[in-house]
Picture 1 (cartoon, rainbow, N blue to C red):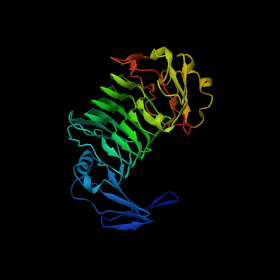
Picture 2: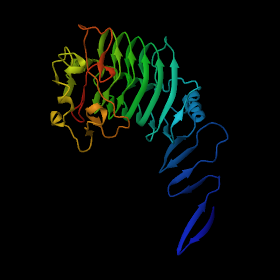
Picture 3: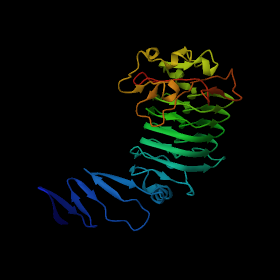
Picture 4: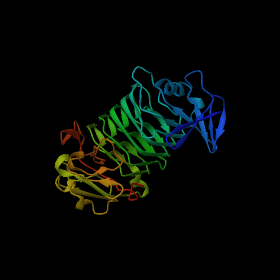
Length: 344
């Protein structure tokens, strides 16, 4: 290590010049410079993080998944995977993937005969502060972010782009189960499926969704909803509370069928754009509302693109051949979930 002093006026700035060899500084260990596309790592207080700065490094961990399935991974900037092949990551992934507010675009998976299709094929770990954009085509369990979420947590994340499959297809997650949780997250892409199609989640089995929403078109024949295609937790005593949908844009008279434990309020479009309608929601820390943002609907304060809408539905009696308009976007109603008053 070399040390030099720079004098500016009466101030002295001390500059530390680090060599490329392994060294430790205040509990932080820096790895030696790598010579291939393997991402470098940094160990902080005994925890190792792999830092992804290039598309080639991201492709490397995808091609060498066995070495990273339990790892802690973080993005250092936005990445574009256009032109790179992507195999859904995780069988399952059980570590932590922290986007640090960055995302990955240009992700393409075209595997119409394969299950577990998404940026993550199967996830039981933590995905946070991350967003993904691309095109996902699979058979069953297809989602832009995760094909099937087996437990674990998704928070402060979102997905855009198109998702297509035969069954269990969601704009964010294909199937959410095993007490998995989604919070402060959303999806805006189009969803096309035969059965179990949802703007956010295709099938929710005894799990938790809070402060999340979906927008965009959702097309399916059975068990189709703008937010969740089928909520099966009613079989184990689950509940939906403090939730709302827009009868004006959805054209529906009920938010979800065959689910007696739900408390879902139908409101006209004007009421859905009024803060007083959502009297139990936290508009200080979690939600915001403004006529200039999200077409006037409530939005998450941590959002960057302020889109919203969706409808939870188990509607085998009302097959959807197409979609209904939502403020110039294709969607099915508006449905919101309140933190700590969540689907469990």
